[in-house]
Length: 317
Image 1: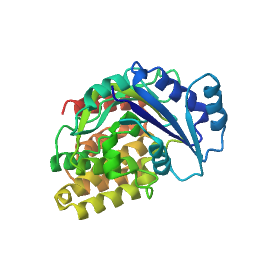
Image 2 (image 1 turned 180 degrees about the vertical axis):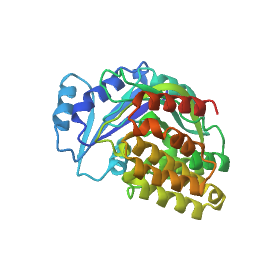
Image 3 (image 1 turned 90 degrees about the vertical axis):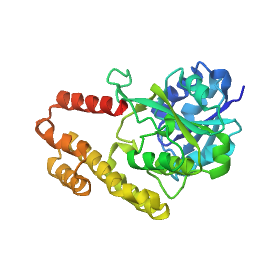
Image 4 (image 1 turned 45 degrees about the horizontal axis):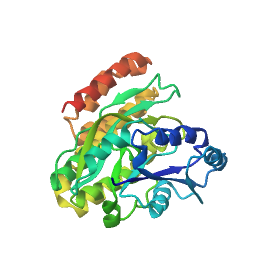
């Protein structure tokens, strides 16, 4: 029975950390969890006190406080402390479903599977009443085909949805600390380039909290990193070059959608135009343009239905 080290990086997630840790303790495969490592990335809130309160209840936690250096550095610091055969990541503001560890471990115990990931539930309200299941792409190819598929479609694979084989970390090292955003995308590409397979487990095994402090909440903020990674991987790995324009087009479309949701129509349209200039066949960009009146009028119900239909369509492709 091989076991799991859980890495929890957190930055000012004190008010969420209790729920995150308890979601680990409530795992149906708790006997497979060797350790829970919390790395406090220079928080200025009550994270330390929250960790101590959990320890006082008898929950075994390894607590490491560092100066603020970003999520890559925090995950790497946690990775240095791990001793399990598998590694699971959980951001301090996210929550696992009770069967996540059990279901994912059933799929990862094969030497050519580098990581297992799942769908997720996007939520904001603590009750989860507003939760929406997002079915992510099933990446079941291998070698260059897997790299190209993930490079083009970008999962998304969130760290909190992943269990990683320890020998992957031993082989390729940790996250690139130059990136404070999109560091996970870079890491998964490196896993695929190392020859490992990905395994998808369906269902919302992760509840991913949406809030203003979430770095991925505003896609426009980390566009520069995405563009840098896109061009760098295409230059280093020529087989990816034919996909670079389509990859950027899809990102511009997503940013356009996020801006439309905020009713920033003019700025959204500039990104949607860029998306269509790079890839005139980008169906996502066209769908947002068609739905423009709903966004402009603030028709959130109609927009939600469009998004649900789109995610359902993706899950079946």
